[in-house]
Length: 304
Image (cartoon, rainbow, N blue to C red; front, side, top):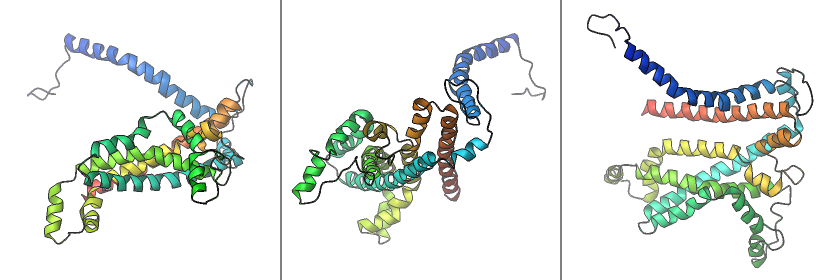
């Protein structure tokens, strides 16, 4: 701020004390961010260009060759493919089912809070504990899911023990986990819609529920839907606990996903360089998803 004469005001001794006090107050947070966030990130980035192994003295600098080797590694490519399949199964299903349930709960006056709480329970439950419950539900011999199939005369399914079914089974658990969070977000979006828009649409001849959804509800839920899709995809890419608890990447590595492969390379095989390169690619995927969301939201705001 400048005085009326146009010349900048000189800092007084009191101003200097305020600046020093502000710097001192910010210093602990800045040091913690530097030690816990910036330096580890730089270390991982630097190690990703090497073939460093924990316990092995010395390492070789590979440069971009480390990433070239990574994209020819069958284990990494398999984990990348499994993660992509998992996201493709979980994200659309959990978003669509969450939207349908939100519409049903919003239309129902009684029991709205109860159903909202019930569907949100998986979000606040411990993932490892719930994975153990799912392991019982999907047990090939006495699991309730197979008992129900047998009751209807259908053959039992080896949910977690077959390489053909394990990724789909994990995706079912992922849909169940993401459903409550998506439901709450959609309910918030539905609540924010101005009710006068429905009255105006009815005056224009839009009277059926299906027509009201496509004319008013769906366009107004655009930003919410985009946010839900992005968050669901990011959470699906980060799947780890259910894989580590239920399958450990098996059978025959059919359920190995990116985060579990990074964990194995870094903490089991102690290949720090390879694990760092995988981690950089993993973060890059998340950044791309966030960038896509930001760009689409900016376009929607611009056109609005």
